Length: 150
Image 1 (cartoon, rainbow, N blue to C red):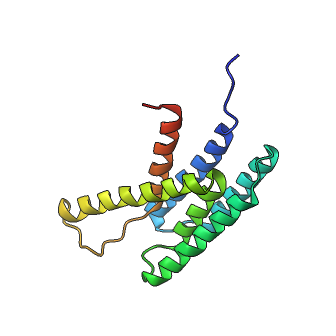
Image 2: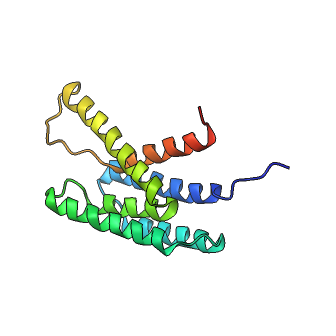
């Protein structure tokens, strides 16, 4: 019998929430708080069920969230509160080190898209792009790296 990775349920929970957030961010430029709260409750329940709940992981996610909210205010709203909450969700689910990977890769992907939009599609430099689709893409790349290593 083939063993099933216990984290698959966690990845499904995270992935479903990220898909919803990416769609709403693309369509309406908003990330809905009920989706974030649901994700956090489901992730907490998962970690409690698997006896892997770590207060440090959730504290790290909260710190990342607060830092991104501060960066959002400092940047004049270029990073939204919804984006900060989205990184809190990924951090609470995956831990601080994986979350740092997700954050860095999200910004690298967003930067590449922005360069493409500015230089190829001739968008203005202050054109806003939603971040949630890049968070979803970074998460998908992380999952692909786990289950389809080179």
